[in-house]
Image (tube, rainbow, N blue to C red; front, side, top):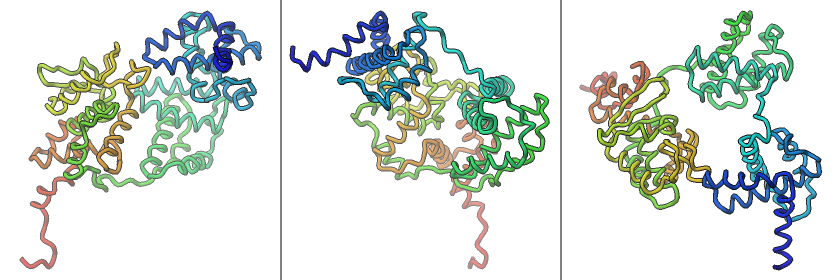
Length: 417
C-alpha cells in the first residue's frame, strides 16, 4: 500500500474510532435503500469523518448532536477550518451528510426528535397556518407562501419578542410594503403581497385585535382584469416543441411525459407532480386528478399520445422504487416524487431543446385552451376541460378565438363597403 493510500484511509480510521462508528452501517444502509450512488455514499462517509473530528475537538457528545450543532460546524468551524488533509470541505456535501445522519440517529432513538421553534413568531405562524388550512381550505403551497410573507412582516417588526400589533402604525405598515415591493417586478406580485397582509390582519381581527386602521393603510395597485392576452405557443412553436420530444439524453422520457401532460391535458405543474399510479385507468383510458387547485376530484380522458409517453417513461426510465407517484426523482433519493419546481424545470429543458424562449410552464395550458377553441369547442367546454369553477375565469380565452371574433367585429369607421 502506498503512502498516498495510507493517508486516504486516515479519515475513515478516525471515523471508525469516533462515537459515530456504531451507526455507520445503519447510515450506509439508509443511503443504499434510497438509491444513492456508491461514490456519493463514500463522499458522505468522508464528510462524517470531518464532522466526527470537529465533534472530538469541541468535546460534543453524540447525544447532543442536532441541527443547531450542525449549523455551528458549517458556519463556525468550516470557514476557518485548519484540519489536516485529506478532508472534505465542500459546503453542499457537508450540509447534506449530517442531515441524513440526524435522520438515522433519530430512527435509532439515539437523539431526541426535533423540537419545533417556540418563539412568539413561530407560534403565531402555526396558529395562522391552522386557520388557513381548516377555515380557508388553502393548499399547502399557498399556505407556505403566505406564511413566509407574514413571517417577514412579524420578524421585521418584533424579532423574537412578543407580538403586539397595536404598536404598529399605518405609516410603519406602508413603509414595510414599500421596502418589500422593491423585490418584486410586477404589479400582480405587489398585489399578492398586500392581499396576504390584509388576509392576516383580517385573521387577527377575528381573534379580537383592533387592526382596522392597518387594513385601511394597505391599498393594492390597480390591476385591470382581462387587460392582457394569455401567453400561448403558436402553431409553429407547438410543432417545434413536439418534434423535439423523443430524445435519448438522461431524463428525456420523463420530460416528454410531463410536457405531454401539460400540452395535451392542460394540467398545472402541481397537478402533474401529484399524479399517482393509482390515478390512471389504462383499461378505461382515463386519468383522475385528486387534490386539485379547486379542491375537487376530476376525471379526464387520457389522449393516446399522452398515455404512450407516460407508459414509455414507466417501462423504460422510471427507477424501481415503492413510491406510488408517477414522476419521481431521477437521482437519489429516487423514491421521492417530483415537486412542482422540478416539473417546471423539465418543461424549461424541453423548451431549450426545441430552441424556444422559456416563458413559463403555464402557457402550455393556455395553448391547450387555444387549440380547443380553434377546433370549434365552446367556452363552456374549455372551462370544463380546464376545470374552472367560474366561466368568468375562462372568458380571457375568448381573445384567442380570432375566427369567432372576426364574425362580430364592426366595420372600421370610414371603410368603403
